[in-house]
Amino acid sequence: MRADRLIQALLLLQGRVRITAAELAAELEVSVPTARRDLEALAMSGVPIYPTRGRGGGWQLIGGARTDLTGLTEGEVTSLLIALTQSLGAEPERIAAMRKLMRAVPEPFREGAQRVADATVRDLPWGEVQSSSASATVSTLQRAIARRRRVSIEYDGSGGAVSFEAVPLVVGARGARWYLLAAPPDTDAGVADVERLRTYRVDRIRSVVVLADGGGAPDGFDAVGEWARMVERVEGLRGAVRASARVEPWAVRALCDRFGAQAQMREAEPDASGRVLVEVRAHRVDAIAEQLAGWTSVAEVIGPAEVRSALRALGERIVEQYRDGPQDRVNSPG
Image (cartoon, rainbow, N blue to C red; front, top):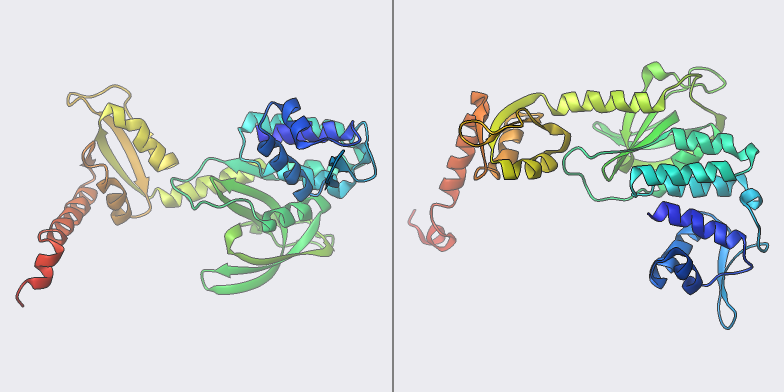
């Protein structure tokens, strides 16, 4: 897993004057291009390493070799932890890598780094999501959380662009899309008013600036719990319409993978028709009909009636549109 490799690569750099990509590849049992990308990722995350060319060249830490992580600055520790929290590796392995880093960093730096770890959530996707990676905006928000600072945000809301100040409390990814949970400050000290907590899509943030004013979570704030409650609220909105379908057993897993949390198997054993009962949810009748239309060969919607009617209407429109070939439609009279 890449996050774990980054920790190992850094520890190897700490203990040597320099290391080549080939040497690192041999140590980590990966290809040379993979090792080179890991070294470049460390440099991009803010770790002070640089390459030297020519005979005897390689990668080395600025200031010489070190035997532990105590030579890193607080900003460098935060940058490395941000890179780990944004990793798409397996969750248990990523958590293990972060724990290794937390144990190794100097005590004065742990508080800010721990805030980043506690306030960053990686979650399962809501069905299909846009393909995107963590942006510089996510890193900026994580640094603000580490330093307990407010941020100034310009945001593309439903009514147009708006600007506001807020205290960032949680950054999380649902699949490949990142979200921010933030609240306005409630006191001069910048403690967030969690009663006015809101959710923002990171890809709609036009700009974010970390301010000098303090801003942090109140004592006892449960970042993971607030994220779970936000997910539950959104799931409720997305799943307002429910449909039951009989699905071929071999297709159940594929259908559930496609719909994510919006699909649930209701009966594990096939019924008299040989199919399994699955419930699918969406935010509108037409949306659920359009999503299920492509599964007609392996799934039959048995209710509610309005979803069956929407599917029938959709099928009639498809038949009408493709009744004639494109050339026949162009040449038809009238």
